[in-house]
Length: 293
Length: 317
Picture 1: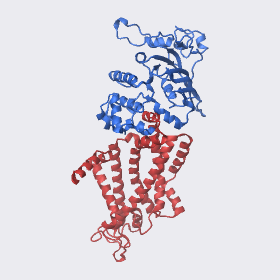
Picture 2: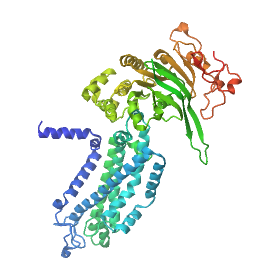
Picture 3: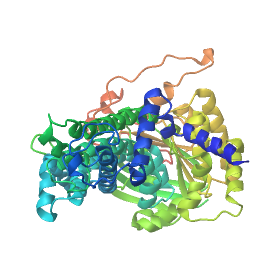
Picture 4: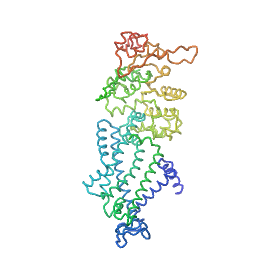
């Protein structure tokens, strides 16, 4: 088998996988394709960006979109396109890291609560629900107060903001699955709790959690931009879409491109994440399992 | 034959905690059940749904923790075993479940499902695993070519065969069959019953067969226990024995007879099964029994074993 045959085989296998099926529709292909492109842009930002994102040129401040600054320059004469490209890096990495932390913690807590039940479950769920009752911004402010403003605070704030959602969803899945006959049958084979949890309950519970995680990355990007807008997130000169929009408000009428392009980047990314998330829900056929969590 | 299983006064009481707005309630799902299952025999447990027969099966296998009584399996008191000792013992006492549709993990191929018992019990089969799986599938009448299939790709009858293969993988001595054919088509039921009969003689198995279908139990079993609301009301020492308890007689008379000459009027039971949460004093069957007397409504009859054909009734037939 040559390389191209192998490539076709693996593409074919991917298309038959549930996640691959999300790309099958037109919407899924466009949204998914855009997200893949965005991830590539974020990874290769230093090579793609035409200018240094931090290089100032006060002589050429607030230049309108044109050549060579395709999206214009900001109040320090920095290239907006390069900053939007580098901003993708900040937004995606902060949001994805935060959601990954949140998912890992939420799945562990939710699975343990759902499996063991009793007082432990009630204690875990009470604490987790408590985090849900605080506004995201307030949680971020607490972290800013403790460890100072920056991306670490933003990451932890987003992670805690979504912890309750992952915990509740995982717990609901586990509680439902625990009653299935195949669990009783496997216990009757003499399986240890760890085998039941890791080989049966978690693999069956994970699909909806992954989809919610996917959708939460979109929300995480918005939250990161919000915190950045208030100056609680990325600190200058690190480019972040939210912080760029915040600095753009000063010259909203003089040079609107400074605020428009990062805003468009946030909007398009979040729309793409949500559309692709919907396609994933359809492809995995788990709409009803996302309810009641 | 020595007794493989001895059940003594086994009981399970389910309680729901009370609160400010509800009363604490408790029900006796299984109440003082005792019987012996000698090696190689088949005992059937019959009763209406809700009479505690499935709970009894799970108490015997300790899938539910009993509230009282004793279960001796091959001389071992199961209720005294630690969780890890119990896990090891489970290899020798297996169960086939009522609902084959959810008895296999939907993400497991048949190979993985059938080899799971070895993985769980940390047993290395004598043959390579693939061969062992193929042999097990063949033993239950499945084409080994199905090994890579997922449960949703096979029929209900095939799923039940996979369930049997999983249960038999570690060569248990006791097999508890919890209505193994109740959710299958009639034609498939007959195949599964035939398979279970063959396996019993080939592997020298001992069965505890739970069913609500008295004619099936009469065909399949050596002895019959009749349960009503958590209690054994009659123990038929052989399937041809005439019913002594009025409830058993009603059950026997409600089976349909295919021969028109033998057809008779079916007299359905009057009245409702009492709620297990507030059982009336005396015999639980008294409200539906044609022979009930004042004694039946005050004093609970005990299962008397004097005659070798035990019955719990003040006025046996």
